[in-house]
Image 1 (cartoon, rainbow, N blue to C red):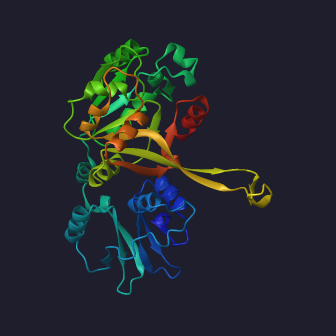
Image 2 (cartoon, rainbow, N blue to C red):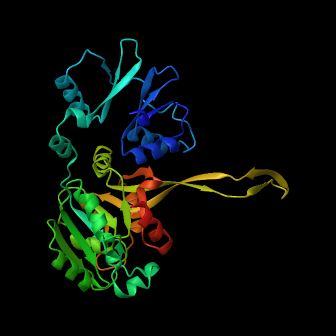
Image 3 (cartoon, helix red, strand yellow):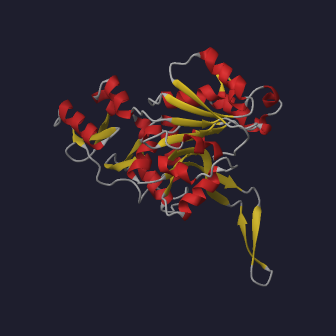
Length: 349
């Protein structure tokens, strides 16, 4: 329990990393005297980042200062269960009559395992863009399609699919081109307990061109993912973010920090030195390659034309559609599409 209790002096970056490492969606904030100050959810952090907060800013003005609490000895489990279900909480702090923090009541301790799983279950189609040549992964991809490059004891694509099946997804559409027959043969031999459908490109159509073949197939928002990334985020939270925000496209972005290991020179208007920034820090949100799309967005993709998903996003914006960004911690994004990252991925999974 003590691992999720923090003081308000921590930064947004520290809070995101702690939530990621602990596998939680909420932190408890107390002062030096153990007085409960509030709670900080992953949603609170996302809102702050999207409003322009820097990763190095403290959480002092971000956390919820009036959270729902239970008073020690003055609540029943049925009352607690009702609060969890009505407000979609993952935890509720318990305090004494003076507001001193005592303990935490977790969702899992109130609901049965099957109820927790049902609460988070998704029944959403997933499209995996699996038709690329994977040139960054040669020489492996001279022989195998990139999705079948092994990572530990199973190929990359099985790691990706497992992340979705853990949240209840069971319908997968794979767009294939390069060495597509090998990929089809692999799943024919595997005989998985989830549905696999293949969308075959006759020629390469970029990172979004083949999505046009699926126009009319879906009646609800669906996931689209690259075949060389593993995202450890809560997919149910991502889907809820997309729906509640009224977005047409939502993309998952990794919060990355870059530190230049030198002093950078800033010049004035006359070409003279103004000042030196010693080892400056820069924060970026990097597109990971995981998206949620509304079905009608597919109509914006031209038929049988090479087309990237970045073009689709720009076209959607030009048409007045709403594009959302779902920030995640850098540790929750594993890019296995190039050798340097692949070797790191072996250690992180």
